Image (cartoon, rainbow, N blue to C red; front, side, top):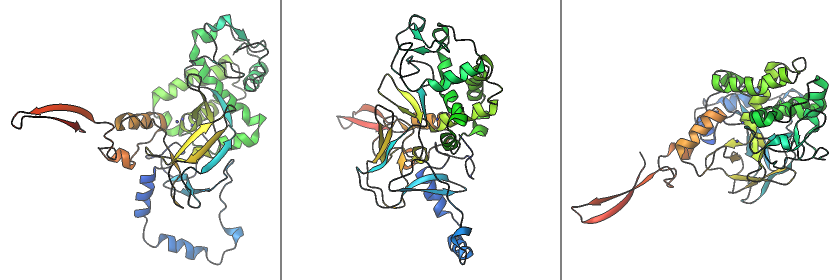
Length: 362
């Protein structure tokens, strides 16, 4: 659960998808805060009017019983602004800023309505203007117009009907291109995208990730599709990072897409999250509490599959979300008593004459 804009303050150490630390790390940070620091800040603020107080930036879609906290160490994260009951809605029907195919190009989707297409694509319908695959040449789906307009404006030759059969990885460039289209077409949404973290420095230090994006996204958009005069390489790499760090995978199983949402990306990661989320047919996202969340506590979700063991979860988070998780579950070798990562072994104690079964956790 990928990318992203300029984030305020903080080092990139053990950060979550939104560029801030896990709930456990926030607790440690509060414990290590120098005594009197908060009181000193309050004293310095006395006598100043509201006009002199720093204003918190406005975040699209941020409604409900939550507020944004921020620190130089932790970055930004959502907390409960009051006690939240289990089952209560926290964010409702968030419209996606951008939505499109997942990375890898399989399953192949109609780029207008996102229904699954049959293979090979060369035998199906294609957009008569740009050549990208559709379920029908006149599909009324709302998603394709952005990249089609850019491809036509750039003067790119319509894509060959069999191109995405040969190179399905070119689907990787569609959602970044849709993000870039927002810059001129919808400045308000573009501003929301630019509030997200991209972790370009971290990603640049990982040649496999950076070069894959260069080959599969930057080169097609700037060279093959003739948009180099419109979008710089840095802009393209940044939206790749925004997606990698912040995108949600939504939609029905077997036909999923990835999407960016306002506000939801601010939720912290935890391997035992206190929320769940769902999307509707229009890919609008809603988040509700699965546990009671006291006022001031972080609102969390999991960026990893919760049924996986600690090694698998931490590997996914380190490689895909660029932080090392140190939540309570990851820090406990029994995974909070679930033994999810343990091996079940059977052995006999001949002296006792009894067969025993146990768990091996190390």
